[in-house]
Image 1: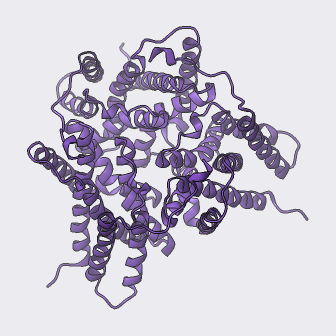
Image 2 (image 1 turned 180 degrees about the vertical axis):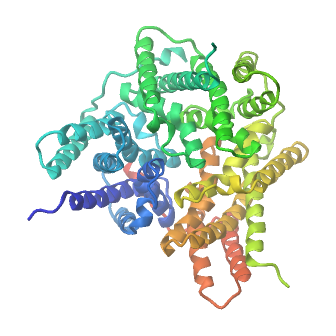
Image 3 (image 1 turned 30 degrees about the horizontal axis):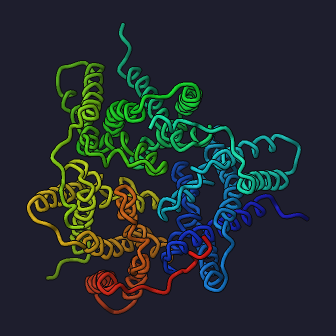
Length: 210
Length: 210
Length: 210
């Protein structure tokens, strides 16, 4: 018997929480924050998007109050990042790679939550993007990093595309777990490929007006 | 028969949404974001203030989930900005001018919504300012622009003044549509004049302490 | 007869609101904002943390709509700061000192509110930190100051520690007012001592990877 899609999604959600917490701890580490400062940034990054989503959809209590495992995962992931980076040097782009996995997982989680709330499909796509990007935006703004969403490499497109792709595949005959796996693979793959080969869509060019 | 004040307000609200979406797309364009990145910034700018207002007033579902026209207007205005700026150079201060119109319209919209919610008058003025300024603040912080609210030229004063003026004129015998039109004209006029002639109120001078 | 703990807490809450409003007005003053711009920043700083707390805990109406004294205190404290700094030069670290007192008071206020809402203890500690730090974070981000939470001197640790210490002392036989006073003294003392002597916990060192 295979695990239920709900269980798969829950495990994925905790995994996304962990990788976003790692990305937050790494960003904090670049600014020489101490353990508790890093845990605050890790928590904001990992639960920021889902919190805004829950507030907008009026889902109470918000997910991390209802289920304390999220905070436990953040504490564990943040603490391990602190320990690891005090011994080894993380690869140069580890923050962006962790962010890419979180982006992919949370775009699916956000779409599922919005579907369960019965919102129109365009709102589902938007909630997918909000869940996936808000935590990282707050992390970057607080830590003085250039927000990843400003990068030319495909980012917002991947977040919006994750929600849309999930809805599209869901209309197929594929089992739910396969739809989730395909969407996550596609979003993370596109984002990591964009980082690796500096791929980007045509972009605005209006700097001449400054 | 003239249109009802409710209809006038709704049309104005969609207009304010459009000009704030344009201001968001222009700010995104200065950072060379692609179309979808620009649409995310346009949406945050256009619905950020009203979303915070609705959350604080516990109005659910928030306005852009209840009525999908707002998102359609944002997509249209953002897309047109993308198309226009790929051919023409927008005037140097177009971002600030678009923001000024959005500021004026949303200060009236925010005041009306707060009045409908039955809040005390001082809260009405505050909700007016929140609706009018939060989206632009998030836009500026995300895009690395100096927040307009930090500019010396009259800005926060115009936002707070819009709510107060609306309440004041409403106590007169003027018809509702005229009150709205006068308030919007005054707020946009003051802000644009302040930009044009670098007008400002007396300001703090405590840099010597740094 | 001594005043009830509820009354003591309420007075403290208004005091914390005032000192955070001062810190916001000082940050606005460094950027040469005018009176109304400074009042907006003062208000965001003073009520930002409690607002996010109330929204997450679904407490409506939020505290500053239910009780307009908070806004009156902000207007008074902001206006006095404007008047004072137009005559005298505030000491160089007055912003950080005001922030330290606000941090201490709001960590206790946040813990009390979360306890009253019946949340689990780990959430109480988190709500303590959210109430104490969110307003200051928004102030720093809007005013282009380096967020205090990024400073190496003990900050997030003091915010989290305030909630934990309050819970710990509450389990003792001490009267409630004493528990509040001890916690506030400890948090403000630790933060001010850290500023004075540049104390910090061991921190991340991963800048080499950049």
